Picture 1 (cartoon, rainbow, N blue to C red):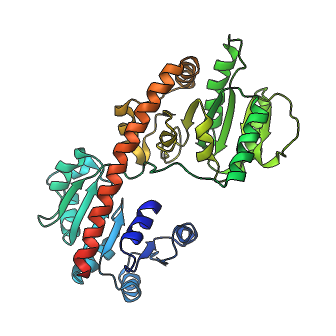
Picture 2: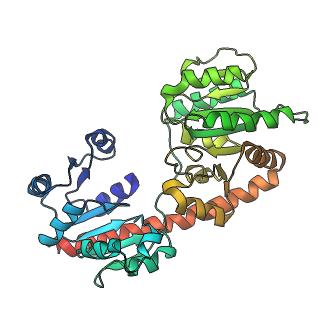
Picture 3: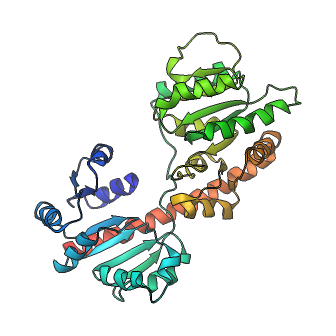
Length: 369
């Protein structure tokens, strides 16, 4: 969402943007994305919504993915404030239940809708069953694919690369990013299969684990050492120090994972075995394919797009992950082919971002001219 916010502000610098969150814990992370006002709405009740209107005085409201604030949406209709939905998340099965009470309620709820942006044409039949005739439905694709490669400060990236080179001894790098509790064990099992069956003269690969919450580092170190593997923590590394040969690197810092992907031979994204799933599209910007577990969660569209493009690999077991990584390790030709496919998918999804931005700009212009 952050790139879209920046692009909209650049296109319409005089527009006053206010960001609304439904819990106070979200204020700080949202504030880091923008200098604009962040206005909490913790309760979707009449009085809190009335106070929100008194402070915000919106001409247009934009919902991102979900639109569950019934009282707020009803108040927009009463005040004749239009709204649009970006990257709408719908339950197709419920939406297609043509005569259910849920559908009748949604139709009533969405009377003030001006436009809805969909990630897939699969949603169109559902949307036509829900939205008013005056609302426009746009199939734009997903805006969750990265638009450009991340940039670290040169000295920070050099230090990160030195840590990998020094400890990895220039061995192939396998990365498991944004992992949740118990997923590291799943990945370690796959890694040990590869190491146990390594028959090449070149050094065996090294594994980098990057947990979703770096505070779990001690727990992961204990797990790795119990597996008989040697591990080094990023947070404890000092430049120009010699290290023993290692098996696992632990990225227990924030803000560096996206950069690490550029040096990886194989990548697995966590939050896809347990948890609420995770955006699996980030490695693609480095021309890398991506593997993930069986759980789709809130990223089913992004996973399906990757799979259709031939760069997403939904795996059911450590054995399948080991086989996938083995294929990448053994075939530079395969890696190059998948890299080209990843580039093509990223380019296509940049168009989704551009279309979404243009629709938003038009919606802003409609209420300000």
